[in-house]
Image (cartoon, rainbow, N blue to C red; front, top):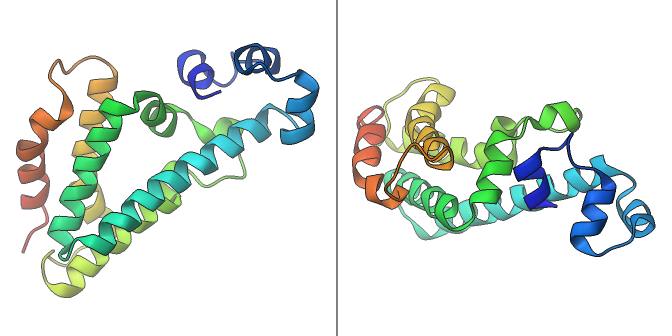
Length: 176
């Protein structure tokens, strides 16, 4: 499913394509998921939960907002290299077009967790006071754009090659 949605797009993927790719009957797919939207919703939730778990794990193990945010960027870079289809589906797919009742990716649980870490960094004095969305976008927007550039084959070197430089720019934009 992930491969089909990422490589062909949601609208160009049929339930028959999913059946052929997965080896599961069309009837079983409809019985379990209801329809193609149900498949996409299940995939979106599973990947969002996976990303949320990683962010929560990082948050629990890193002490400062600086270290938590840097580790999140590092993890996102690693995911883009190791699981490009996941990042493709999470960042490229226009989920609101085929999952209109779902939150947009920027309002999803992983991004809420990232904003919570940024807000805590403001409370602790590590991050200067500003709108949380501005600070979060400053910290994570550039790294996410680098991921998109890598997925588009604009960057030739793996993302970890750029981590220190990207992180330094991101952190300087918000640090006190």
